[in-house]
Image (cartoon, rainbow, N blue to C red; front, side, top):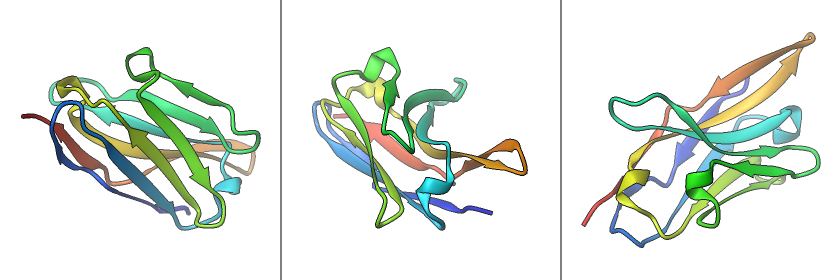
Length: 120
């Protein structure tokens, strides 16, 4: 079982930046993909960014393209989400996700979430 622990959330003014970290208890190379999701109050959880672990291909939801960057550090087993030019609508709980295949079945692993609040 892989454990994911997020950190780096907080309160930031519009236009500011934050970097979220997701520390994994095992090599991120065990995963097929790592990603960040977010859930705002009263809304469904949505995909923000994903990264194919082997190869590094990334994908972003349109609303964060050009502002957010997902990256990984294989030595530290950590995935990051650099968030720039933050907007109030980015306010949400952000969750780290790992997709790992075990015995031919792909499973989703989730962190506990970290709150990001963008407000003046």
